Picture 1 (cartoon, rainbow over the protein chains, first blue to last red):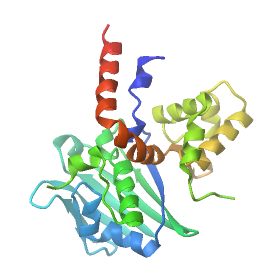
Picture 2: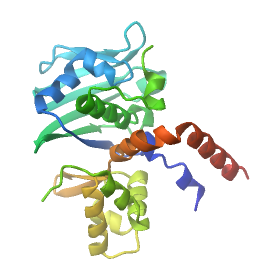
Picture 3: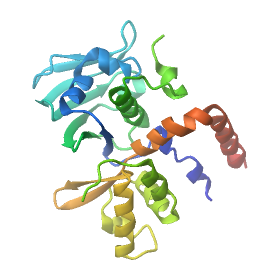
Length: 167
Length: 110
């Protein structure tokens, strides 16, 4: 075993990428409920480390994500809004100077009903070369929390997600 | 037929093979590869790589997407996160992370 194998961290979802990272999850819910969980600030905050994302969710509108009373997390434009199937957003991270320097990337949410469930695919692309893994490394934890919320109505209570929960 | 109810069994089965783990590591190093590119990473026939990729795709660990005429394969870390949230964090996270760090430190120290 070479030592670089031990630094591989699938659990944190920090795979180095080309210019695209893809995250897919199956959630037992309807496209409408899933769309609501993505676009409603209070629901979104429950599985996004307390971050509220606000927008009027029309094509060409802007959105702003922040921890209430705290720091700015991200902002961008809603490039395509087709409820409850497709949301394409430009994404500029704001939570640190490091991620700000990464510039504007793109996040695409695709919802496809499959049987009694939905396939949700989040594609984070237009990433800069040697992108900072912080930019996209949080998606697996966010999507896991989203699945738990929609399927059980509960919040994830793993140490990792509690660490970021709002007191 | 496409399976949509990913069973945790399929993820564990997919991970229980060294070649498939090697393919995941290859995608970890460089995400979004074609079958032809992946073939060069492992000592195996094209058919063998295809077979293993199919198992990984059915477990949700690999997601393929078309880009132009190419089919690119991406590592999807979400199923591993789900296993982590369901099993690892429950039983072992505080100890596991401390021990993993110790292992990394000891092995990286010349």
